[in-house]
Image 1 (cartoon, rainbow, N blue to C red):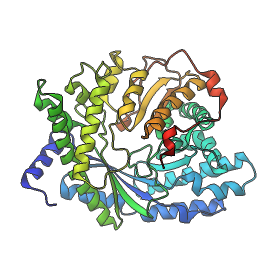
Image 2 (cartoon, rainbow, N blue to C red; image 1 turned 90 degrees about the horizontal axis):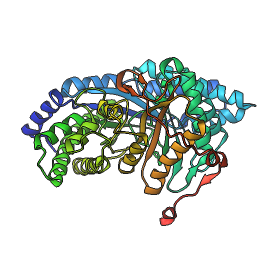
Image 3 (cartoon, helix red, strand yellow; image 1 turned 135 degrees about the vertical axis):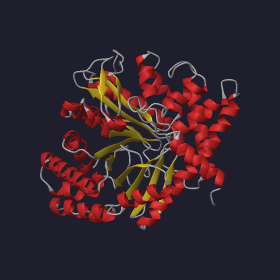
Image 4 (cartoon, one colour; image 1 turned 180 degrees about the vertical axis):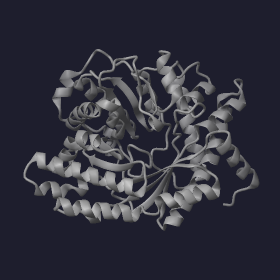
Length: 463
């Protein structure tokens, strides 16, 4: 469908005035043809495949950005879950220590490949453990602190729950320990290694956003997925309505705005894919905020009508926003996928951080908000002395929301070493910064010790 002159002018306004950009074009690469029982051969195959497949990613994105005038902020890569790729190499070694060495070495190889092609993040240091473990899965989880502590661009994601399988509580317990150890391993940067680790329920295999991007097993050899942005565009549209517009009119304006954002984002993604000679995959509709003023999901919720994000009405406003964005995006594109929700990260959204500082937004409120969006507890700094058992409870609570409601939820939480509630952290760049949130002094040590698996809900038998 060709673009009208009015659409072109609106796009120019979105870019120049309202902070619109394409947040990421992410190239998914299958590494299944790289599998080898020899760790050195595996690493060499992985490096060669990634650098060869992604050689044109950054140049093609820059060409399209200059030609279309729409900023493409990040170029990224996702790969086949590494626990699967490394399984034969892990099986060939004689001890858990050697298995960890294999995984850490592969993480460093991926880091070098990402640096060689000029991308800022590479996702897929991942495992799928919602129902149990293989040797590769256990080795990858055990390697997380050293792998994330010794790399800069590698991102990890673990699927520990699904609506079909329930929640692997033993995996959750191991991941809580890995999160604590990763924070300590990256103490000099306030535990920033945890910002590259997500624990999921119902993890999608086509998500272009970091840190949870992974190239799913049902995907082609290579595919380009795009994640759009646009909170500033939606915010401007809602503000122009004024405070007296009824909520159904607010929803309609958001829907129409999301349509325009999605149209522009898919145009960019398809053109980058064409120039690279790979198929176009999906368009992720998620509104991705930044620490910049005016580029905030929290400010949209406040423009809809809550005094400050976290106040009563916040979850209702978020539900309206996410639903309208999905409806508008689905009208604009037949290739919607990924997360396609509303991102509510604390440190990456200055409005969310402000809500925490004002005492309106707490961990419990954020958890309630995740029931109506497809992201979860995201970029949340908590005190470094938070007990491991409490982390198990936080993870299990959030995954349960996803499992019972048949939706994606995730947790990206950072126990900041040496920090307490109310202190401030600064991660820089898109990771932003903000206050450390308090955590309940009540725990769940008995539940955390039980292990086993929380069964899937009865609705898992629908097939």
